[in-house]
Length: 386
Length: 129
Ligand SMILES: [Zn+2]
Image (spheres, rainbow over the protein chains, first blue to last red):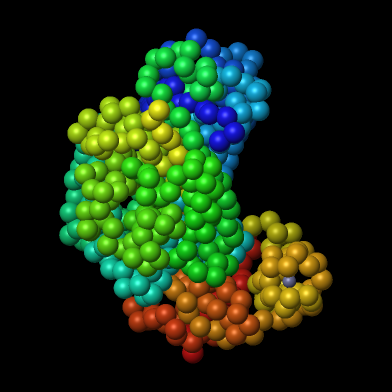
């Protein structure tokens, strides 16, 4: 990066079905944790990712609402949206704000309050991340889109339903070691395969849940962080951002997530790292098949060979390339706008060696990959312990 | 669905009207202003053929409220003869016997109703040949 940025504070709200808390409550809860963790006495600006408060809560204009309820007076506040990659986008915009010299200390947050509508309302709101006129109009759902990716991966590369299930089993194992996870229970392959089918071949246990939750981090220049000296330094050394066709059917290869590939290459190049230099990954496993395709797009596995990643144990927290040590979207929960920031929170926790039972040994460099829609947008960040 | 929104999609949904780039020959569906392959802005208007091949598919078992009375139903991505792909429901078929590579015919069908006083929404669905 042109200028080093440091992550000096992290915070999560409680995650789950939080009927007693509002959108603004959960955001403020996460932001207060992050501010307290950083030790700063003020923030200069804030960026918040949220996919669809309009559809979930009949509330737009979050920028002003959340700054108001955070009690930070008149600071510049911006809400950004890129479907389920809104959190990752807030992270990027906060970095650019610091790099431009406009702000010194910036909060990057994400929030989604999804249970103020029923499951049907949530399904419709999430569907707005697909092409409304040419996908949703025909009756397809988000699980349906990823199911078609899975079907093609199975037809083309011989990937099996068991291999998909292994991704869920692995991420629930990780989630069982994370006190913040919405679904911390361990599951086995049979439980996944015997769970109700949502869209063939995806079962409900192949899908990430509906979650209320928020996440926040505090960023500043590396120089400022050295003055504050509250934590071991965590530096953001690379970021990548790319888009792909909106409609899944417009892609030449339905199983190739080219926005992921491009954002990954950009971020690695910026940080001067190779994919083999990364010690751990938080990736966007909105569905089990997504994790498989993402690992292939990032270059961790050759095209078509990602199916066995989880089953082989390679992507377990104690394996050679740990993926989703937090439990991933699958077990930790997926409040869509908050996910991209929560991934940063997990990597920072690991790089600070504060991840407890699920701690990855010798974790020095981590990568987050946050994705919108069926892969129409993607953000990748690389973080390093200094 | 609002009437203007419905009306302006008729050429795509009823007639499969597409654009063929005058510069590189790439076919866009629906019609666009700019070719995504060569950025040219001149297109010939063509109607897509109504035959294609199933590329991938799923059976939607948990549908949104608009489609809940149709579930379970099949959806798929179909590549038409011209190489253009569309996503649509696969209907008049045994949902347990779908296979990638099956030949499909595109038909004009009812997609969903907007309740008792709303418009009936039509469009294309695919049927195995
Ligand atoms: Zn062209």
